[in-house]
Figure (cartoon, rainbow, N blue to C red):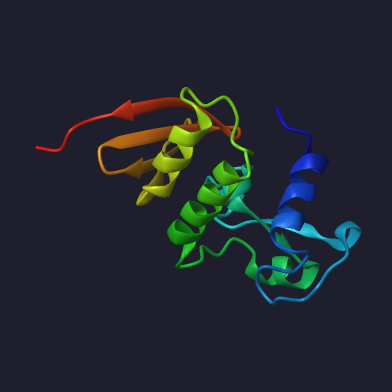
Length: 138
């Protein structure tokens, strides 16, 4: 498992030290992490679901589900893969980057988050891809 300080440092750097919601610059020690898809509704502690947030915005958002959560989770997942933050892929990094680039949807089940592209699914838990399933559409 990745240490919380490491996760916070990466998210802060990725988001360029700005609150994801209002754009305000925040010092690292004053930053909170917002679960973009709320933790109270099953959102995860993974890189693709965390954004840098100032305290006022985090309090105001509460457990609201942003309309664009799917697109944001996909974009942040692609970024985490490109940045080498998704560990233990069952394929080489170049193939994983190609697969991540083709992701079109995301859904959650009780165990993990599933990113789906045309003909495959990537199963993610705790910032690790632990399974790739390939299938053919008929």
